[in-house]
Image (cartoon, rainbow, N blue to C red; front, side):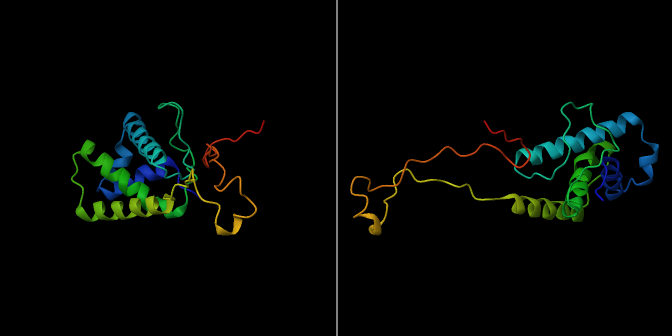
Length: 158
């Protein structure tokens, strides 16, 4: 089962040494950290790291108990990077080990999300084997428009 937003926040506070402090937080502080989490995940989504995280359309629309549906392999990267993001707000210095783990986790997610961009050459020769069949068309067809839909968007057919 996937983590909830509250569980990510609790783990992040634990990483900066404020695990018991979570229970003393006001609802406004929890909402603020949840907005930081949502913002960080929106930034990752924009960079191509799509983890099925439920991004709210409105900053105040999220709920702390929303299930995030992110894969287990991304959990460590999320709460370590969230801890680094929120530490200055609570007067904490981030240990170098936490920075290293967060960077390793983020780099792993970025590497998994990295896919080379497909390109279609505009003027490619048909090849030596086609010269007798295609005397009028010695080059390949013009490029087609790529499909503009990602894994998290809708695709409609006309």
